[in-house]
Length: 417
Ligand code: SF4
Image (cartoon, rainbow, N blue to C red):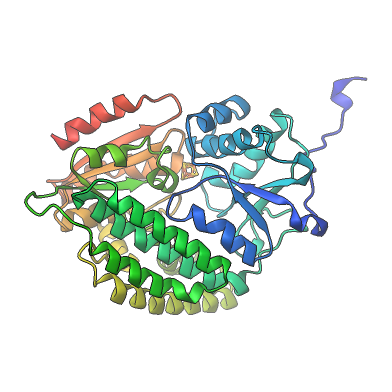
């Protein structure tokens, strides 16, 4: 038969309602959120299992079974999944994989088809691929998967804010601890306790747990006779918060005696509140009246929750209050139009400006190879940043599967010296 006459079959592994008990493998994202995801999914009625932490093997597998016209996080995510499937620990017929989808303008929106192609290349084309997204509107073609979003939203918000806040406290404590490893073991202890609370459906106790974490972190013996210099870390969300994805530069900088400060991850999501206002003003909003009212409702709900979190965190000597996303947007507006919303968009400009205003004049911006969104924004604003903040030292680091950690460290040495 002539190959040209073959009809295109696409990827037709379906996740039906009967498959709800299947194991759903998810790639590792970050240490302060990933451990809680399977417990949250269980409440939603699904059996999510984390892949192990991203590693060199993830990069190798991603490159082997994907193509190289995609951004580096996509390669790692695919590699995480394939490496884990290849361990043989799973019954392939009882397995699905899932990936989050935001439906934005960047390549993340193509992860779904990229993973399908990769799985097919590796001989796993029978495994259903699920898109996890709020509202289930972005490419969710699987009839058996639907997140009960309104039911789990309070839990998701509590878990997210718990992890994000714990990470902020940890990042400051680890730079000051006298006994190495103390902060990390407290971090692990409280992540584990959070997972247990979620599993017991007691997520309302997450804020009191954060309170206990703050209190116990206060007992850490810290170095007081030495000034700790701070370095800001900004850039693309995956490489910023995934240790292997960012080539462990945070760990390396800490070993050199620096405190590494990454903005809270929540800003990545709450930038929507700003974006919506801008889009409405520009006549570009796709939200209908009901969606706008809902967004306002979430904004109020979120503000209330954040106020409670702030009361808890201010009791910690490791906590530096951070600006609201609206204030960050105000700083960003001097540098770049707020219509630049793909990837981290204007947040990159706002975060740099914010660091400078707080006296942090060394900032590393991590950018995955192939990331159009972050490359354009970050490199594009460099000159303008210099005009407004002449003392700022910016280092842009391109991260990809072929890089040597030592090369990145050499470039970082120029920044820290
Ligand atoms: S922001 Fe960049 S690196 Fe991240 S998913 Fe989008 S294109 Fe890829």
